[in-house]
Length: 361
Image (cartoon, rainbow, N blue to C red; front, side, top):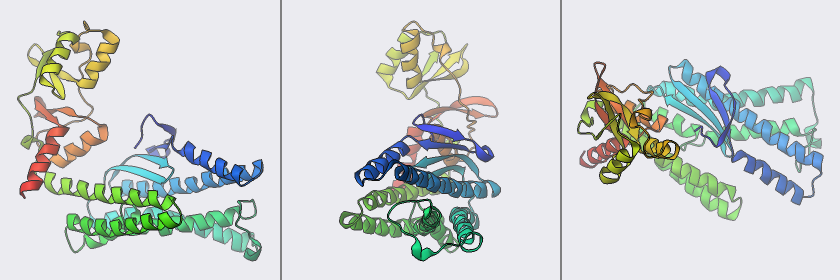
């Protein structure tokens, strides 16, 4: 979920890590609440430091998932820290239920280890009297105790059997041993929605933040089930089944005014650009708008047309192509067959293909 609205923090183990801009709203909210409570500057800073420590644990949690996925053959694009937690973008998740179980369990296990280390320190290395600990504000004296508690909460919360939490995936992987992954996902989705409704109702009477979590679970459960339906159907087809060969063309020497006129009358997702009758690239609507703003109407189409980073072959499984296009946010990509240009596929076309196949099966 990396975007221009995220601040890049680094690339541990080759995984891009960033923090979303909305995280600053969380810090601002903590400061606002702390000031209203009459806390001093030092106390406010302790609260901010505590939140940063929690999100450090969340980052380690997501790295646990990511490294387990890589170890089991998956591919991890990035990790983004949000005010509601972390999100690891795993582009290729191993298919075996056992692998999904191990990957899902790795995150909470990291927090169990962190909590265990803190407990060992407070019990053996530097013992404290738990009866003297106060919990009204974060202080140097209760910082580690509160962090231990926070890690145990992260474990408990993530083990709720509801998507998109780890518990939902653990539950699905266990069910998948006895049934199809689609059916297992549907059952996990239904149970997750029950939890979501409970969170929302409880939030109206206690903590409004639970309402946000409830809707987050509702959307996550629905999204996961929809993706599984796409996977279940599109895995049975290849790119060849949706390739488009009656595409719109532009010559590389056409000017942008000509391209704009054709876009206005035909409204395609993009044009195939040719040079001497051979494929030379793709010109998308966004490419055209940027070109008109920078090069003007007399700009040359060939200067804007380009290929894509993705290698889409006619024999590629359609769901794999769909995931690649979604990951790269590509509406249209060229398709090759035996190394030669064969046509194009459009994300919109894949979605329409899915809707039809889903309706008739």
